[in-house]
Amino acid sequence: MLDYGMSYSDPAFSGISLLGSMRKFSNRCRVQLVAASPGVTTADLTHGENIRTFLDAHCPSLTDAKQASMRPTPFLRGGMLQSLYCTMRALKRDKYSDISYDRETKILSDGGTVSLDWYPARSTESADTRPIAIVMAGLGGSSYEYHIRCLSKTLGKHGAGYRVAVMNHRGMGRTPLTSPKIYNASDTDDYRDVVKYIRASYPNAPLLGVGFSLGANVLTKYLGEQGAESPLSAAVAICCPFDMSLTGRSLDADTFLNNKLFQPHLVATIKRFFQRNSEVLQNSPAEYDWDAIMKATRMSQIDTLVTARDYGQRDCWEHYRAASSTPYVDGIRTPYLAINSMDDPVTRYEGIPQAKFRSNPYIALALLKHGGHLGFFCGLRPKIWYMTPVTEFFDAIVKHKSKAPQLALSL
Image (cartoon, rainbow, N blue to C red; front, side, top):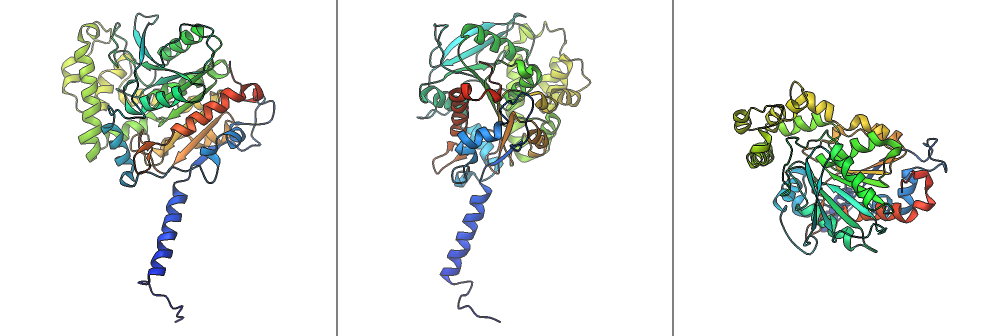
């Protein structure tokens, strides 16, 4: 046996092993960008480019070998821990999230109400050309969630400054429910009305979309429905549940965190929503079974009793199939960036339509090994990673729109 003068207990050997492990971990933390190759174009891309070449040129946090990585906070190295920490931090205020909104209430065509929380304060000048990011929260969420306040402050304080309008769904974020229609992952009408309203109010301002979880699914469906007619210049979808059936099964699984955290939190949120708005919802043509709703313990039961009933569907599984945004991805003609993690316990990695990202030159997927559901906390003092990629992407779109007609910017 050859003797190289080094044993497994030798400090030098241990150092080499540690260095090798660190390199492997660093490699696992790199951003995997899934997008069409530079040669994949369409008739709309008149300069022969696509979003991949655009990101290579303008978004180093997603493409540069030295910068494009997300090393999770050491004590949050797991999707469940990242997701749990996000939930626990929901109402925290710190230097990244401490803001005050300017609220605007918007009555929709059917008499329903959504609220728009603006940061900074809403401009009274219709000629204001500062970009506006229209943000949607996930199920049971609102503008008050930590990650949304962090993003709002990041964009509002960045460079020349963006304006942020966070759309609170019907009955959420202290928004009154004024019609029996309830928001869900499938219906894009409310978001469409809000975008039209903001476009009419500020006709010269670039509009940008951001969606989280359920809001990301609505945003993705909206873009696919609108196609080349979308008034948005760009969009970012974070933790989009492209396959709602898979997401439903993940949430319905008999696991500790589902049983002790996710399900109790979501079900309690919906029950409070019904109790708070009982006078309005009792007039719903769906004729809800209130006793069954109040006894429900799983979101699948709630969605069968409520959402599927609203749409005349057999059960939640039929609704989830119809609500999935995957079939709409091919139709997107707006520069679109999805950010997902491979360890997300809710919007599972297996449900991401990666083949569609490789064939549609308008869209890209930033896939990370770590991040959980709406987490993406990095650094010794946890900070949300995607703030830099989002601002880089939006900056590049806004600054280069006149030089990039191939991206079909609708300004």
